[in-house]
Length: 418
Image 1 (cartoon, rainbow, N blue to C red):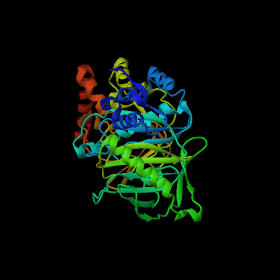
Image 2 (cartoon, rainbow, N blue to C red; image 1 turned 180 degrees about the vertical axis):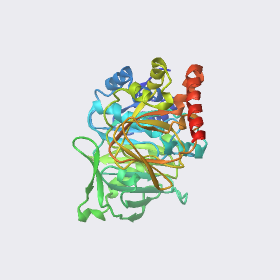
Image 3 (cartoon, rainbow, N blue to C red; image 1 turned 45 degrees about the vertical axis):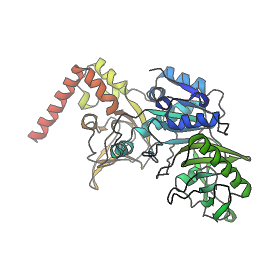
Image 4 (cartoon, helix red, strand yellow; image 1 turned 90 degrees about the vertical axis):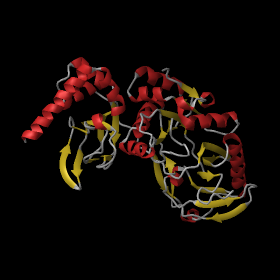
């Protein structure tokens, strides 16, 4: 399949780019203000996540004229639907400071859709298939105020606009970091209710990438951040979005220098949280050598090992972050490249893992629930392999499958003798 990276105006196929990218393309066609950006198809994202140099070069060329800093957001093919929103599952990496950092951010977004939590969610909603992870890369705004708007009340179903807003980037609202200001408007734009929140922080961009939580001056904590003129602009945006996309819309928006921007418009769903990520770590060094240290793969020859190593993708975990959680659906097998992690089961510490150690290989075979919890005790860099990629390779290559079956038989024999 051809790998695509296109401006939003050309992102017309949801099966390639996902609904978020196509929605932004529709907004451009309807004359709505959208931050400049490009859409990446799922196959290009996977290639970039895997370190494919040609794919990374195509991405670099596409964003060369795009003003930095960037927001790198998931646009997976099956997210943001009315039945399954994937809210809180797929990642947004904000304030990616240079074009050189964008491929790493794309890799983090790809991993978010292949994480244990995302796999568990897929099982829950009946979408247990390999995700196609499109991505949008946009110039990141530095808004005065931002938030969300529903064109129909999401709880009562009333024919009115519900708006939640706060200072700074909208992640403060969608991630539940503040009690936002609350407004209700009728369809004509008349204000039905104004309720000040407690906006103690504002999410702001850092000069060298990433974001931080800025303390809001005391006078602004309960000060309404939207006046009548701004509310009128939002009422107009609601009408435009309904005309372009249909009723019952969930809109993310931001205001910067007097201009109202549409960030996203999707079907109303119940979950609203989003997640942020630190900038990713360094690129992989020698995945073949890492794989050869794993007993499960020790009997493979060099060519067979290289076949599997080409599927490995790096993943970065912050200190204290849970890598896998006991009982959750299993998505991937990991080899530790650098850092340390603690293993526990039923709350009892079992082991400490370091460089060269591995965990989760049974997930490559049965995709069953995790038997233990692994938490990063330092900054942790792993090579990961998902069963979505592993299974087709095994199905095509009987020689590899047979050697791995023998390795499993040895482990069973040792366990029985023990």
